[in-house]
Length: 295
Image 1 (cartoon, rainbow, N blue to C red):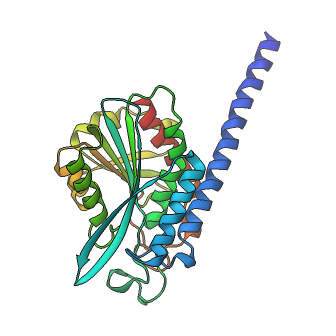
Image 2 (cartoon, rainbow, N blue to C red; image 1 turned 90 degrees about the vertical axis):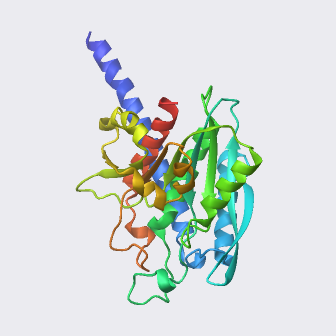
Image 3 (tube, rainbow, N blue to C red; image 1 turned 180 degrees about the horizontal axis):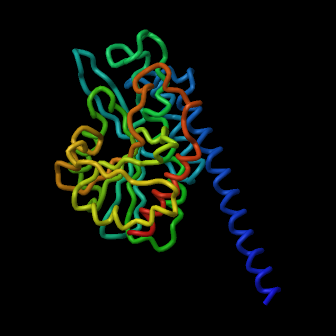
């Protein structure tokens, strides 16, 4: 019996160590993604800018390095205040020959040097947008490899990085309209969007979920004790204000995940050093569980 107990503790110790090692690697990876996207050299990734193109290239290269798959571009244009913007979404369709598809998304543009969208006292400084939304992009990049390498998945996955968000949800609208027109993808069963997921409050440890009402039972059944934070389920109407808008209005079940607003929102102080990387990694593990275990 004594030998059995010793062996059991050795096995448990091995798995705890393995999980700790995996989490350490994931946290460092999230930091790399986020610090790169929110670096001053990206100049705030304004829609249609050269720096946004630079961010697009970084996302595409990193995705290919992680997954050995190539993101596909979806070019679109829009006009706002008499200015034409030329932008690109990026997507990859994981075809598992299933009957339904989960779309996972995050926008990668931000507000550049601020301008009228800035909430800083000085609006002509670089607004790096670490939480908004380099955090969502980093999260989506970090889970893409595991989604693609699943064995016997029950659904397809559609991974999308949007541009044109900050000026009016133009990227998600262009992608929705394009996908609907060409009927390229199998029926969407759910949309999961990540927007500002990097600033979880350590005192409350809550992840907010704007969700379609029909997903309540799913969310409330999840074993949240495993992830060391709580879900704050909020009203579905807010889904019409985010990149979930056009999917939600079409009757597709949606969830938008966020750790919420903070004092650095749309300010030049939204920098990578303020992100809660340990909590972001907890969210990463939760999203993988939600997608893989419930579908």
